[in-house]
Length: 492
Image 1 (tube, rainbow, N blue to C red):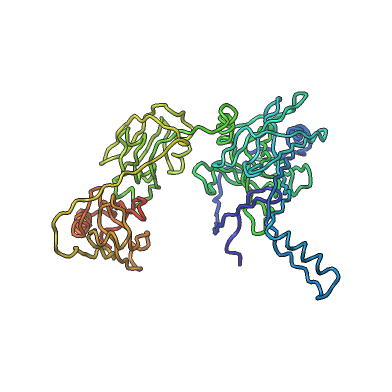
Image 2 (spheres, rainbow, N blue to C red):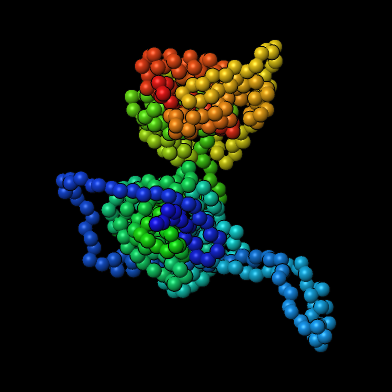
């Protein structure tokens, strides 16, 4: 039984990157009324012939230095070669040896003057980049204009003698599950290859804050990385980046970074040689049903603000516990939407942010900073002595053993001086609290959006919520200093 697969960026040889995934999905599709769908073409030949000249092979190379080791030839005692080999080995130990390693990938031309898009992992750390063109076999060296590791996109430039055939980006947001798509690239170093499939899913996330992948069953293999995913109009709607596979080969689950993300990145790389993303300055988490009920939200939507370090959000009045519902006029349905919307907003612009706080919405004006320049420095304050001589207060609430945060407890659990609250010292593994991630060493800073400093205050807040008939009470918990909100049933 296979328990884990690999998501593998599809570069040729070398520079591997693997992320573990454990997942299983069963989908039952109800009978629905007929809908219009793309007509299956009789052939993709005309489309492939038109697009292929704009797709390129990318070969990269770099010098790798290795330390000489393991050279210990067995020479018979008294051999006439013994003195020669002993003298040779005396000169060799520890001397580095260099070799040239190469890798293969794909890319596509986006302008007649030679701008080329590919994956960052295709050209990362390369000393030399060589572009091979399909139409005439021409080879040109490429210069790196800029890279964006966050979305795994790179922009290259060649200097052609004549204008190059190129392709344009389409709107990936218009792509529907079931639409036909075409992938062109250099799989497994076999040269130009075309594969067809459909859009299997949209808005997939793998590992990054700005992920917006199109899933496709068009065959994508090692070496396809950086190649284009076309719609039937011949527009690029994705950059082929990774596959889900137990063995590194295509099993019909490939991922292309959507053009909705790529176009903005490429425009900035082309203009500035780097990305310039908007920065709000909040730590966020999803709003689930428990959190929504605890806050009094009618539905689970938006992004819950877990912490507000010094930055634009703090200056604009956003507070921990706020739920961001709208940013710059765009509704935030899921937490994952907010980072992408913020990143796409111009640095220095002032935007309206609608938040839910204390049972009502508020509109705040926030001037965005630049993500790449963000430097968050947290101040540390030391609490004053309060003259208490008794032992720390303890209590058990909803399966959690709690203790007052004294200097001794702070030292025992290595809790930062700027964190206040009540410390969890043990959690019943059969409790709702344990199931929702509560563990010993965590600090409860707030209950019901009110600061707590003693176990009694926590117990009283739980009792008040239960008496009021509430199904959830919201805790602000700090785990190793990192804040997050947890919704617990006060009656359990």
